[in-house]
Length: 421
Image (cartoon, rainbow, N blue to C red; front, side, top):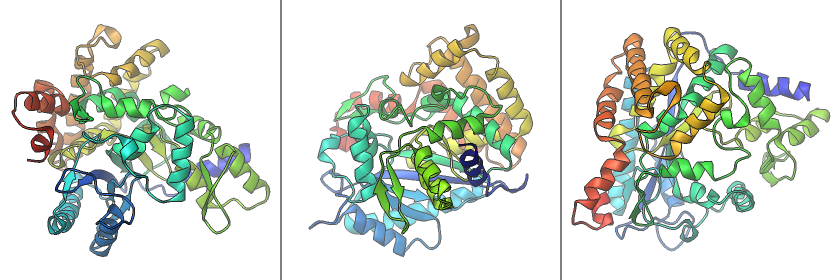
């Protein structure tokens, strides 16, 4: 399969940019509720649905990114790419104004949160698209929480242009190593089925138990060092069972082959297209994912005012070579046992857990957080404001999901009133 691996690598590196050309984009998901605190249906029915909302949004998007639907009717906005977070903020606020205008007219409410706090996924319809129907069938055969992932989670994804192979490998490695810290700082899934979730990092827990063949951290799939991690990623990807493929007319069809077998079959016939490779790469759900850019996917959706906080955090860590070197030198010194135990920290929102080098998890959170602020300052784009205030709040008071649970317990409100009012 060496020829196939080269084809995939070429596809991933097909849109590299110059050293000063990197842009940042985000994808933001949210839930939509009606006046009775019920999720609006995803498919066409006798009431206004997410499909109707998507059409309205696309008709009024004003060339400010694009919109799509997630399997349970979550609305996803994908931003245009920008060189700095200040310009990204302008785009983000424009998106919110457009969405809010439509929702007010329809007496609907958006909710920016990691996991639906009210509904059982079995009561949420699945979008009527073949791709997601096949994915749902796959999830039923896999781990226990795939339906929760598809129907009841929302996230923030950060996308970076790739400069070159080494650049991609360093960002992949750093982003994967800091997963437990990212999951702690940006956890926002405080309720499930109407009840507080305690210290369980719920959205992370759901993804860890969705499909172990294609989810979780790169480290869980034997990618433990920045050197040659891109090649290792490709080797991993071609061994993952396929969920779907595209036919000659680019229509979704089912498959019982691995992603590599499906692509190899087309390559042998000299019929392999760029679209085939991209559709295969879309079926990898690791926290850090490659297409023709780098996607970092391990952030819960946050209250709208905080959405750019994880963008600033990660951008501060990966933009400057000196900062990257400091992080890489530390993380490559950890052995397999330390990395294994480290990844387990992401499951519980407890900063007092022990960590590598006889330091607490909280110590490492502060070490990485302060490096992120230093990296933002080195960028000289006045972007520190997007992370520092949020970070100081989390360091002082704990994750915002934990804060929300405490506030709810001390209130006399119903959960619906607490969340929406």
